[in-house]
Image (cartoon, rainbow, N blue to C red; front, side, top):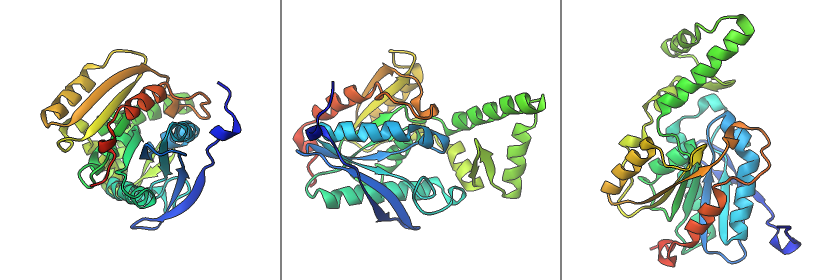
Length: 284
């Protein structure tokens, strides 16, 4: 559908004061606000690849009544700091800074969140620090260890193509960790602290607070929820969190630079957000 000028959402960039320095943020204002959302990006190269898609997502959500604040964590994107100085604890703090900014911008409304990949995993962590409105997890990282193993696999393939042999990638990582040096993660310098934190990341061991409203959107080749996602969400429901899970056919746009189409999970997300009662968004 062709959009007219009245549908335009003009991004408003500004700075937030994080604990370590300035954080780059962009606000997308809805004309008639139904709710407000913090958009949390994924990790490293995935953040770079998904930048355009998350921008389009924020604009679409704002057109549908949900103001969005898209945030770069410390050491990421336009925010201050070097990537190798970042760690997950700092990023959870940054997440909370973004939530507090939304609360100040829209008094009386409890901010929700939309997190992609690691951003979704950090959203689950932030639920222990802040009371949030409805939250959406787009293909969150369930296992940080599996995520790191995928990186090692890519490194072995790259070695095979450039050096004719794939061995040595694991030893290179372990040597860096042992000596306290940064680890090369797809061209990004990751500190030993961050690497260890990613190794320990396991959503199956997280327990969202009781009463939390969550939508888990599995994105991939299947329209059926995977056994792993089912097991995690079933466990979360035992803790009395309100969880819905759905699967959409989606190419991994977070691994494709310059993806132009809106994510397949966008419309189901808008539908779910619109279905939350107004009281779920009200700040107490």
